[in-house]
Length: 374
Image (cartoon, rainbow, N blue to C red; front, side):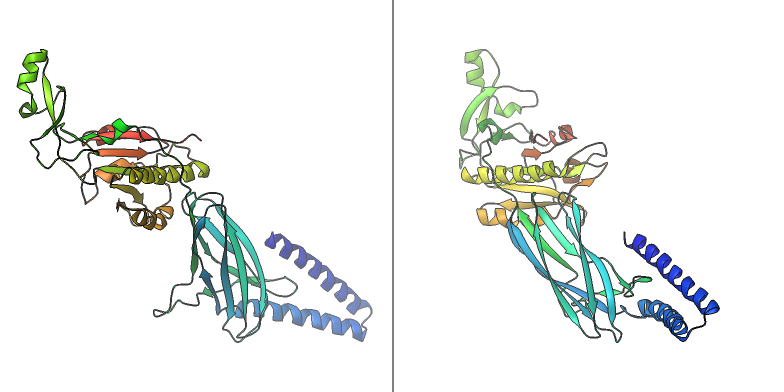
């Protein structure tokens, strides 16, 4: 749009100059000569000014906190001209990107600054989805008053020195809303590698204590067979030991997408809300657990213990900024390859991709997939 306006202005300016030249050659009047001289001087001065000014512009952001999705947050930006030449006309676009959903929008900014001058702006941001919204000014352009010439400005940040804070971006967090989450009771019991069942409800201090019995399953240890009951019932029966395991459940956000997957912003937001709703539901049952996700910026699988509401909400900023990335390697594989290892026997996979690589995860314990409807 700006380039179209510049081309149009140049055509009009060229026609104006041509008319003055014709009048100068045929009339030779002093007024025409003065106008022609002024026109040429302006063109040269405007060209030089757009390339020499705007070399020491700084843009700094302040503000940013956490609100619920749909609420409004105000971010402040200050532009400053630290150069010795004025900026008669400057334009730019502040870019706001939701790192979780991938949506972005641009906010146009126009300004003029004398040498050493500054100007402040307020941006009101809101988002219908949860996520971390980063606001920054990636580039600005310096123009002459008639918008004939344009040159990119060299933009620094007000706090770019090593002792000052980084003000190049501002972060706004739009928190997920929690909804009632129904987790079947049978999903809260899991199995370890030897197929011993561990209860999230009953805790026994003696690993030899029997919590219950069940039918024999392939892979069960012979030590767990209840021989007397097997002889009485006529079928092989095994004992269920009551041996506590803390933090046995891992709720995984499946945020690495198959290249063929189509997961729109609304569904990405809903998946995060589902994960936190499930975590809150587990806390209501006094069940400690962990949540996990893949951080593409850090290039590693992250996990956080959740034993209280404080720990639950403390993890929100990291999760809202993790984003959904396209990858040939699934979140499940990244978890299995993580340096901390696989130390959970009950996995709740929050996913929009069905059962991607869940068979690999089932080698280590129970897997249940929870999804959302687009």
